[in-house]
Amino acid sequence: MGNNIEPGVWSKRFMVAAIVQGLLVTILTLSAVVGQMYVKPEVSRVIAFGSAGMWFIMGYIMYIVVGVVGVAVSALFYHYLEHTLVAVYRGIAGYLAWAHLIMMNVGVVGSTWLMMYGGYEGAKAMLPVNVGGLGLTAAEAHEVLAPLVMPIAVFIIVLAIGVIVGGIGFITTYRNSVKAMRISK
Image (cartoon, rainbow, N blue to C red):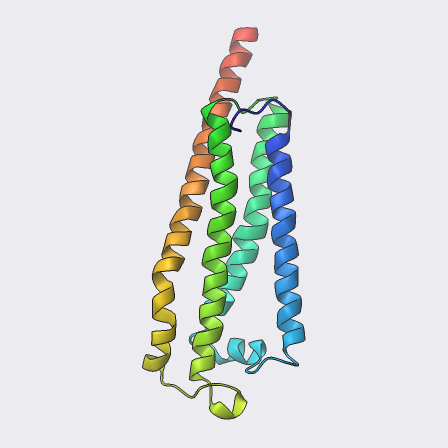
């Protein structure tokens, strides 16, 4: 599982992950737009409300930035190593690449989707009843968001560890590639 022989396999895996993340954000966006007609309160009202609704906005933006763009940029790092330097992920570096791929994607989806859910539910709790909200105070709405803080933090830690171990694998593979180039000269 950790040893990579096929050239370019990691850049391909990360590009596929970025495409899947892009598909998910497209589905999420279309759901929010179509949901304007069916979901009360509407996502646009939650966004315009601000306050707890900012969690929704931050989760959505961070999902696009880290989940789609960040994963695609990671693919470029792997592409550089695998195609430009003709480096091969072997041994521990292959396992670190797997950890990077899995932990980064799980961490970004878990943290940002929980943020969006919490932001929607928190804003919904605070919006007036006549627009589909619950009419709660900010303190009462906080009770909706509070249970999500630790799970979001755990997913962010998973994401960060994934990126760090991916970086260690990148450095390891890069250094092995440079050593191999020196030896072959």
